[in-house]
Amino acid sequence: MGIQSELEKIRNEFEGALMRAGSLKDIEDIKVKYLGRKGDLTGILKAVATLPKEERREAGKQANLLKNELTEKLGTFTSGKKTEMSDKREALDVTMPGISSSRGTLHPLTQVMEKINDIFVSLGFSIAEGPEIESEFYNFEALNIPLDHPSRDAFDTFYVDEKHLLRSHTSNVQIHVMEKKDPPVQVIMPGRVYRPDAVDASHSFMFHQVEGLMVDKDVTFADLKGVLSVFCKSIFGENIKMRLRPHFFPFTEPSAEVDISCIICGGKGCRVCSGNGWLEILGAGMVNPKVFKSVGYDPDKYTGFAFGMGVERIAMLLYGIEDIRLFYENDVRFLKQFD
View 1 (cartoon, rainbow, N blue to C red):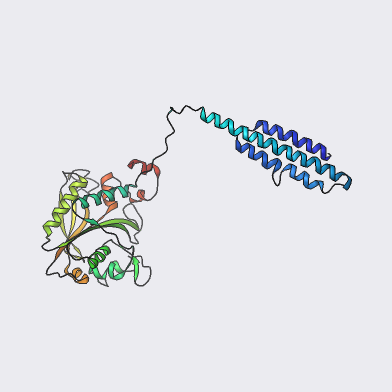
View 2: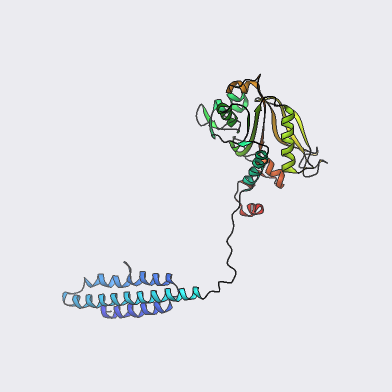
């Protein structure tokens, strides 16, 4: 087939393709196929160089004329198609309901943490944050956690180097706050914490805590009980009951575990509360005088209380969730329930 015949074939195919084009993408595909760097017409222009000298001039002229012709037609057709599409858009009935887009929402853990924060802020507490990579002094020593305490073992803590680790609780922020501020102190400390626990339905290597601290003259255990009672009723309902059981924490003395009556069975006993009618929700106690000494507070002059809770634990009780892993799997079907 001669050059002239090939040029005529390209012209016919180009015009046919242009008539069938229904979108700007179709037009772009036509441009690439016939006028692109590897297009059909470009291939012929390259082949002109291989023709005998007496044919080369005329063939090159005809190929370039066709290129200019196709380029002009393509430009005219593209402008017409854009105008047509614009007219169609203007013809739309703007009074018709639009297509609604999906609306994002706060993660359930964020919602619960904000709810916890709001309750304590309403009681006069401020919010403080601190580093997630912490030294042993702030995470352990200043909190009266001795060197031989199991929590300081490498199997129970994520160490970054010999002296620094991913904090295992937000109690480290208490020390930072007390170092910078003289009493009175009334603060809560929300944030992420890390422990190398095996992941299962009730454990994760990363979770969230909210800890609280109040220090002043004549702060008593009764003050602690009163604050926690208001918190429990605010978040779980006025009918909830609360009790404190003796416990041990290195940084508080005396210490207590705080339980609420089971929100599932109302205290009658069920599978969730293991039949005893009570659910553990947090730990608390009076600040150990040794902690005060580590930050320069006079334990003969000041007293205080501290408490700490797991946000996941509170959220699971509030929403009846039995597997902590659901919070981290990013399943939209799960998350949409908390819009």
